[in-house]
Length: 305
Image (cartoon, rainbow, N blue to C red; front, side, top):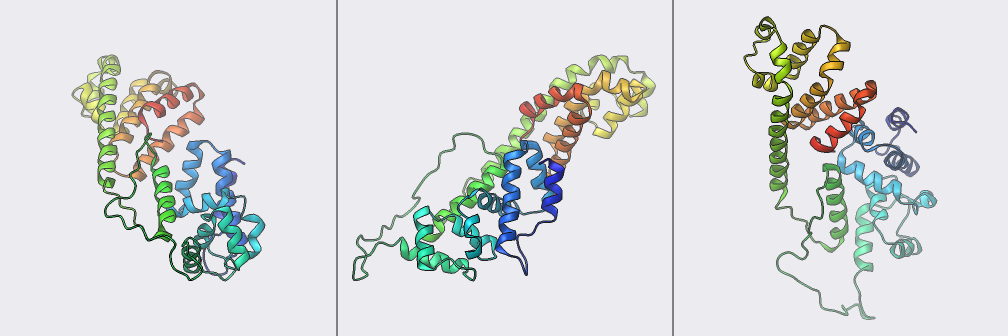
């Protein structure tokens, strides 16, 4: 299916609310899982952003949709995506035991599943006493070492999975580096913006020299640095007038315009603004085939996917 087809199907789907059914939850989850398999990363991210679904909820629905054990059990599942996700987190042996014990049924709540799971995972002897003394560790139990940079979507999915995994053991996930991660991302964006500025300054020297003084005065630009630092609207207006036609604008200054968008992406303070700049680049890629490879290179070098 295409992006537009997934957008239409997802807008008509349901996964929560009064009167929802387990079948509808699985149908929505299957759509999201299908989109993850069918669409490019850019289209999939656009679908997720435009869906209006909270990233943590989206992650749960994606995991549900990827679990092939659930569709055959649809008549036994409750009409709640959170509870279905909790069932998804069971191992195959735990899932079978839950079915045998009658713990999975259309009216079951997530709290019941959690209590059942705690009992199952607690090894006891015939008298109910613990076979092994409970392990109480002061301080961190596990340290996760990051192997590669994670996108925001991957980080959200990881947090959801970790919390679901440790929840039944009454273990809390602490994120002391959350602020540091955000600061690192901002620092990286600033470094990229600085590098793009330097590249643009070199690229724009000739066009700046060729531009008439009246045009520079019209846009209140006194140097190539002003042209690099100005708004995207001013930048576009300046080069549109310098080119004197839209076709010549794209022929002469298309690459510079694309790089300017990458600069604005890295300077943007909000996620919504960054999404808009990404979307503009993707529109250029689709509408101007001659710049498709340029946009791909810009995404690889300057844009966080």
